[in-house]
Image (tube, rainbow, N blue to C red; front, top):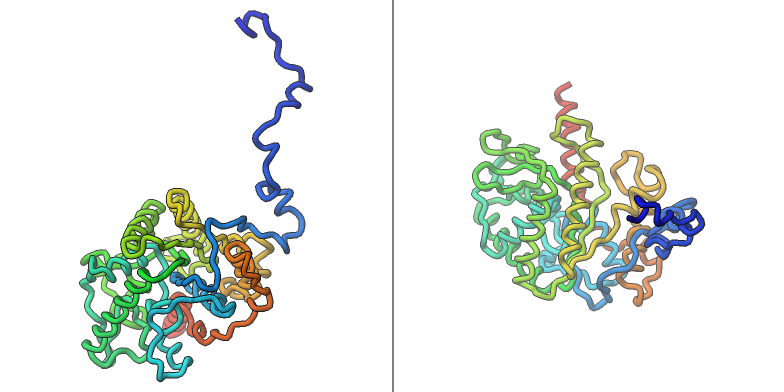
Length: 372
């Protein structure tokens, strides 16, 4: 029957051409030639947003060092950047910034992986208490999970523990009170404790602490591990605040170094790919989670020289301007944020201190120099 019996003939070529496909009605932003091809100066890959913000929205953030840029720009545009750990008010802003107050919404320093974020949430609700003791050296104590919080260290163990308790209470309050939480995923590589799996922000022994392969191990998180950590974090966060909305983004900053036996550029591509996939999976399954395309804006539009300083890692302020202009267009379209405002950073003192990974990179350079 059919074509096999010769009863029917295939449609003529002109009949085939008249058949519409699902691609025929795609909007311009879904077609490369119409939305990206040619000049990319005005391309904005962030098409819309799941929810909006205004200047009454309490916004908090955490993540890799690029997240600090987002925090600074939100303040510059007079948004309600929510800080639950501002530091001693009798100290100057510069003095508090030197002690990492105001760098983010709470004094947690850089949180590079979804695992770091999850364990912080677990600690603030009393579901995880790392066994790693405080690091003691040069007559002072340091928090293994925030080793650079106090530039000169804590004078006593009691002082460190009191500050930690204050910090975790501030983190819990942050998740409870915030309307929109922005988390910038930065890395997949991390160092963990063999005692209980606690994740450290930098490799122990990087100036502070002592490296011991019997106590610490390296792990490069997979898509599945990253998704699982984000899922568990969201469960805890929404127990504290059922109305919390979350924006995930991926830092465009390349890895400072890799422990994998391959070129750091390959590890950077792997890490960012894992994070982007994980963010997409979470967005697809949570209506109160959105993804913001800061990674795409910095890395995909133009060339390396357009977005990064000569070191290939530091994002140019012009690129940050593009990122934040896109953010405000997507999430605050009715607010009318002037682009000129995005270039003003009166809170720059809060981001003057280098990130943990930049600090680590400088430390490696010093070590290599001393060995030659």
